[in-house]
Length: 240
Image 1: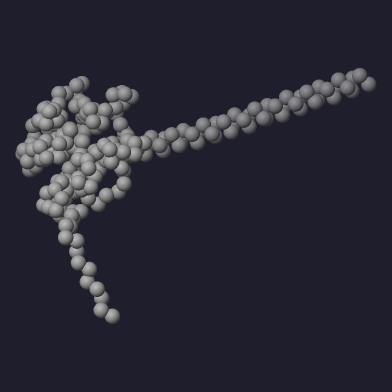
Image 2 (image 1 turned 180 degrees about the horizontal axis):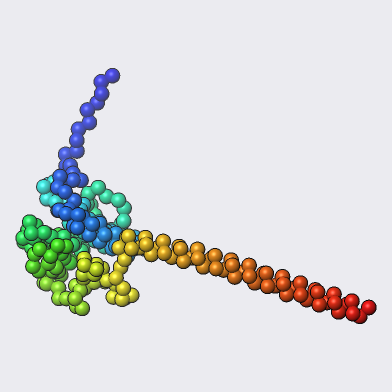
């Protein structure tokens, strides 16, 4: 039986550009932590999509027109899993982007990518951060105002994000996310796991203490009842 040859689609949008996920372990660890922190914060929002290092294609029919932001957020689309992000199918471009820069990428992050995010994708907020502080400034942010990027001013040493209603700043030596509503830094995944483990241990300890307290109360009640019974017996005997 002759096997049919199935032709490849005319327009093919690869899910990989062959480039590494991140330049260094510091970049990779921070990239993954930021995605998980922001994703966890919006876990109850079905129309907030958080991703990173995912190819975004922005011109239908041309698979050379793509970019893979380190971290990005899109409001108004579902959380479904994606192999690539096609802007013409989603009808939304990213609202928020973070690029984790290095000396080899910083110039392009500030020119080519900045122009693309500003003029083509219309990204509302664009942040550039160097985890190793090898470039100056090592942290900068831009907000789209009337179609043009304006630099975001620091407030309390943090850059406020109107897209996320959160603030970005350095915490424990790296880029963190601060919630001005709760006045707390959002915990990274490993810290949340430690906190969950600590809460579980505390709950187990409380349960053990409650069990011991209940046992002591039952023992004391039993002793009191035995004493009452003895006294009643002695009283009955004395009245005979």
